Length: 131
Image 1 (tube, rainbow, N blue to C red):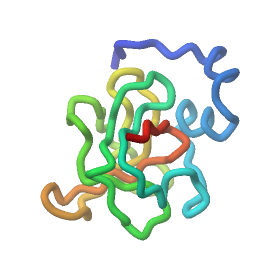
Image 2: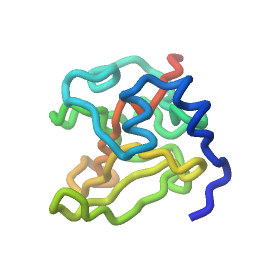
Image 3: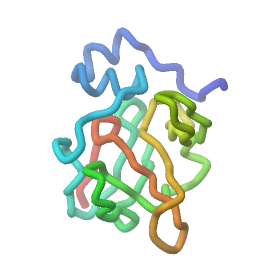
């Protein structure tokens, strides 16, 4: 897929922490319950760490009990690219920023109403604008 923004890996290596770089550009993950936003209850907007695209509103965040920030819907479904992921012996749906291709996390069909979806997103792939 061709993205609107091509990520400059060298510039991002200077901008991001090692964990943020590994999550966003190498499709890594962060530890549950030990990440920045899993328990954040402030109102605001969560943005892509790499390109600053607004992705999720705090009004869609819920406690999934998984230790990662979880949302039942993005701001706009067009902002999230969904990709079949068969790594680690599982079949999952990977979520990427549709604007730059940065890895965000995964989407599962076990979320609350109204969507029934759980966007399980790495804090390391997000920044947060508090209202």
